[in-house]
Length: 165
Image 1 (cartoon, rainbow, N blue to C red):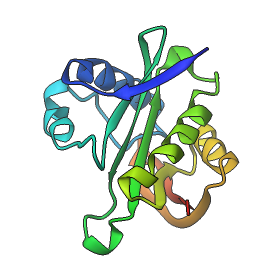
Image 2: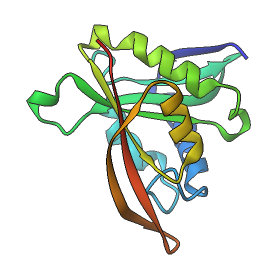
Image 3: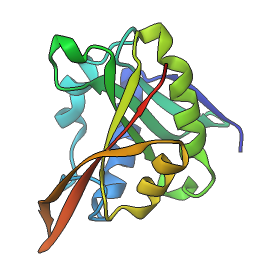
């Protein structure tokens, strides 16, 4: 599998939303409980910026197999060098090390965006994501125990982070 990254365009939004909706049914990846619509994400997409906080699609042979993004962390000026990261991989291509390649790609994008830190919010019960980030050198910087409830299950939200100097 030879993957590539390119800035997402508005016509990619339906596939971005479809991939995101795949993980809702897993009940340990996102705090959304019901599928979202393309219109639900139009403002989010419009607020992304190629300069500082882009959304990328991940492609294999011109087929979208995932997406990733940087977003502002906590929105205050002192946090300007820290970004929240999101990574979502199409269920048909999970397990092919796309997540690892994505984190490695994102690390190459930090300097030009004047970013030094990446923060990821991951449910501790989401073992594949916890493993992925920890294998890439992320550490647990915080834990919010039982802050989410999905189908009667209480989930812990881990705050994972890594400094890139």
